[in-house]
Amino acid sequence: MQAIKKIGHAVSHWEELSMAEDMLFSGESKNIEYKVIVPDKSEKYMKTVVAFANGRGGKIVFGIDDKTLDIVGMDVDNIYKTMDAITNAISDACEPAIRPDVALQTIKDKTVIVVEILPGAQRPYYIKSLGMVDGTYVRVAGTTRHVEGYMLKELILEGQNRYFDSEICQSMTVSDDEIERLCKSMKETAMRNTWQDSEKSKIKDVTKNVLVSWGVLKEVEGKVYPTNAYALLTGKMPQMPVIQCGVFKGTNRAHFVDRREFEGSILEQMEAAYQYVLEKINMGMMITGMYRQDVYELPTDSIRELIANAVAHRSYLEPGNIQVALFDDRLEVTSPGMLLNNVTISKMMEGYSKPRNPAIARAFAYMKIIEKWGTGIPRLFEACEEYGLPKPELIDFDGDFRVNMYRKVESEPGVNGVTTQATQGTTQATQGTTQAELSEDDKAVLMSIVEDPHITQKEMAAKLDWKIDRVKYYLNKLKKKGIIERVGTSQKGHWKIVVEESEL
Image (cartoon, rainbow, N blue to C red; front, side):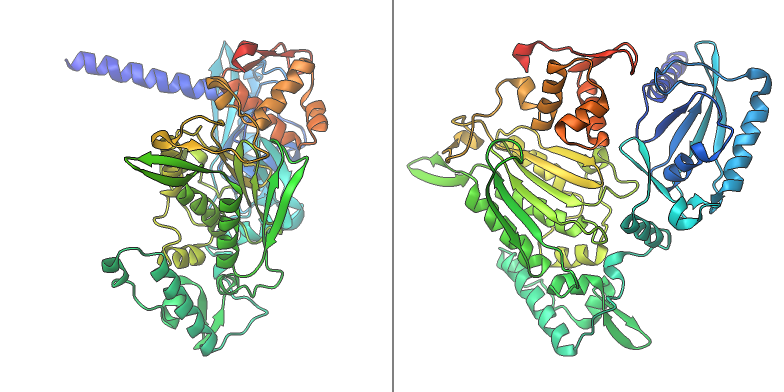
């Protein structure tokens, strides 16, 4: 039995190594970059080093052609000298100091150097000779980019374990009467959002000290100051962001049917956006015994939570606005700001949560706007499954985070036999299992390939009016789903659609 267990452990270990190897040599991504040789000027790869340290970490593999993915290997006679040179270059060039893990790996009789950079705790990391402003880089969708101003501020706060919403709002003062009004308003909201009388009795009063403990107010030398969270909760933030809502004809943003912008406090904006969506989506019916019950085509609790999460977790340093867009086939909620470091879509699916704005999150939790941290995404998937809807889509790209909730095919029975009544402007949704899994962006990429299998990523980006990172995201997504494959090299090859046209 012991021998069998040892064999089992050995096989499991081999499988883990094989999987890690496959990931390491499967192509560049957010956390993998290739170099044929070690450049004479270390700055050519030092940007990626600091970008990995500022993000979720990553590996630079020397000895692989980044264009063809051919394993070239390194000069084994001088390989240890090269490893020392890389270690010293990173140590000398970066501020704060970055200590890489430099190792060798042999694949197909060729030896490569793997430089692993772990996520750093002393952000921002930057190239010392360029200074913090010019020398800070981040990783976005598989490419290394110079950091934008708002993102640099976030990195500085993160490195100091501080949060933007808990910082003092410099242009504001606050009186005791204003604080009392906010406390009263928050309790009223909590009571409205609580259905059971037994639970209402447990809701405690909000006080000035409670707001201080949450980070909505800040006490310095005995004096209380409003934070950015207070300014957002009361709608008094200078250059207050808004929520932009719109209805589009079809499945892209070419033709507006209706558009609105909602101002006021973040609570007022959230509620207005939620009511706007309810007005625009279809109403269906469900027959229970002798009674008819009207229901919406999409789960309303999930709509509300999507908008609430966008408000609570967006980056308020980024100047953009939350966008809520309704298309014939989907509801799309986009919030400014990439996912935080150590937060991934797979973790979110499992209920992991790391609040970007903890003061706002605590206030929302008290007011029963956010039920439990981390449960929103799993509940969204459960609700869509109950309604018989396609799985939602979570997208982290181009500095924003987006959730797509897909609408049901016209005249198909939905949750518990619900039939939705289509309103004007709703077009027939995509048919078939494969189609249900494809978003409109997926289809746009596929159509570009159908029209020109030799199209390059740059040409596709220009044709679709997208950023190159967005094109790469969808191409990689379709490759992982086994819908397309690349034949030949990145320069001389072409795209091939693997599934039959009838399945698309």
